[in-house]
Image (cartoon, rainbow, N blue to C red; front, side):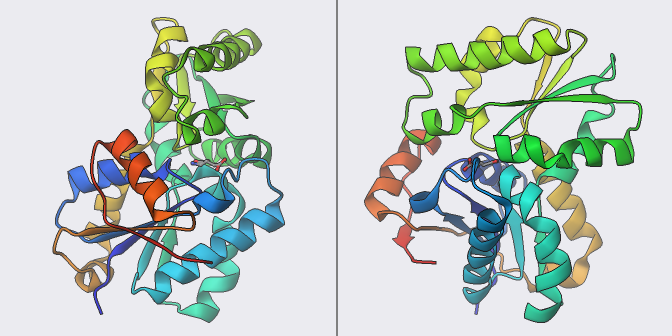
Length: 272
Ligand code: DGL
């Protein structure tokens, strides 16, 4: 059985992370799973996000993945630790599940000069406090201000990311966070959907404030992880193939992937 790297997101957002991973590490096989039928996850409770995420991880394991990346901040914030500590030892202690928060947090330390950082993310991610906790473990001198952007994921999932309607919601949240802390010089896009709103985000972010999407850092961190964990690396299949799974209609996913990734994808519908 081949062993692709599993990449999970509630919907299309994880494609922004997958793109960077494929750019940096094109030799590996990848299996992407979007739980599009149940997205967005952002406003669900801890229990629901944990249950959905565990089902997704098990589905990827059942298809041969030894390593799964939760390319979703909401799932990383709410489910990752429980899955790592409580579920993995029972399922298979040799498999691994990694998230996107830690690599992002590691990257921001050297980027901020004012030591004031803003986090734009789903309500689930902001309210979990995971970013603040992780930032303070590594960079105790950094102040983190969170701003939930509840309309941003629906804008992306409904292909409205380039529409005039998106301007209103993007402007509102960026102005909002900078009003709360005008010293912010670094804005983390703490949701994998947000790079798809980049044109609008750039438009409303004042010069001098750096926008930090995560893909590049997550890909770099995966590369380092694989260099260090050679037993895991040796098990991964390396034919440069990518296959996609969705819980929604395959046709819909194919159309969206073409829109988001400018690529025709090989996709199959599954139920979790
Ligand atoms: N891409 C997910 C994230 O990074 C979006 C979550 C959602 O479905 O609301 O948080």
